[in-house]
Image (tube, rainbow, N blue to C red; front, side, top):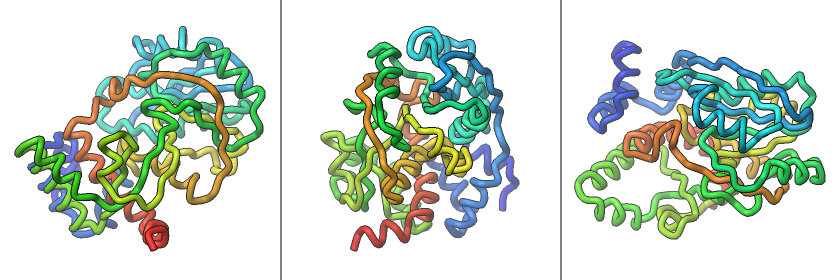
Amino acid sequence: MLEKNVLENLFRKGSQDDIREFLGEFSSPSELIKWMKARPTGNANVIEVEGNKDIAVIIPTANASGKMARNCQDTIFKGLSIFFVESGTNDPYFNYARSCNRGIEEAKEKGFRWIIVSNDDMIAIDPVSKLVSGLDGIDEHPVVFTEPQGKYHSYHVKVGKRANLKLLYHLARGHRGLSLYNLESEIQKKFQSPYTLENMSILHRFFNHEIVKFVNIGSFGIFNSSFLEKRSWKLFDETYINGIEDADLSLSIRKDKIDFGFTNFRIGDLIGSSLGGYSDNRLMRDFINLVYFNSKYALYLSQMSK
C-alpha cells in the first residue's frame, strides 16, 4: 500500500484519476473505513462567547474573527452563548463532525437546556428572540427541527438504490457527467455500497428508489441536553470526512424512533461558503463517505427494503 501521506494527497487533490488511484489501494470496505478512522486529528480550538444561559450555539469555523463568524455573533445569534470551534484556514484535517463534538464537549458542563449546532454560513431571517421564545415554550423533545423547513436544514432526504434517471441526468452533462456517474458505479460495485442519499427537490427525488425517508438536520439542528447526555455528549460520527455525518445522525433518529418536535423559526443557508459548494470533487469525496454509510446501515436498509 502507498504511504499514508501519498494516500492523503490523492484523496485531497480529488481528481477522478486521483480518486481511482486512491481507491485502488483498498480491497474491501473495512480497509477503506480503517483508513478513514485513522486520519490525523485537525485543529479544533474553542472560543466561547458568553450569553443566554439556556441556549448555546456550537459553530465550526475557520476563523472566529472572520466575516461569517462575526455575522453569527453580532446578528444571527446575538445574545446567545456561542462556542466557536476554530480550525484555522485550510486545515487539511478539518473534520466537521469532530469540531461539533468538541464544541458540545466544552459546553456540556455549563447547564444549557438546549444546544444548537449551526454552520457559520447562515443568513438571518427571523430575529433570534423568536427562536428563544419558541424554545421556551416547547416540550422537552430530544431533537427540534425548524418549521418551515430551510433550503439546507430540516428538509427531507431519502435513502434508496440509484434510479435510471440519474444516468440520464449525467448524460445530459456530457463526458464529465458520465465519467462521474461511472466512478460512482465503480465504487458501489467494489465496496458493496448500493444505497444513495437524495433530497426531495423536483429533480433529485427521482434519482433513487426510496427505501426510507427522514428529516435531515443539515446545517442547523437543535438538541436537548438530556439527549446529548445519553449520547455521552458525542453528536456526530467522526469517521465521516466532511459529508453525510448529518444524514447519518438524522437516519439514526428515524431508525431509533427518537421523538422530535418543531419550532417556528426561519434561518437561511448560504450552502458551501465554508467547505465549498457541491463541486465534482466534493461529490467524489461523498462517494467515499457513502461506503461507510452503506456499511453502517446495511442490515437496517436491507430489512426496510423487504
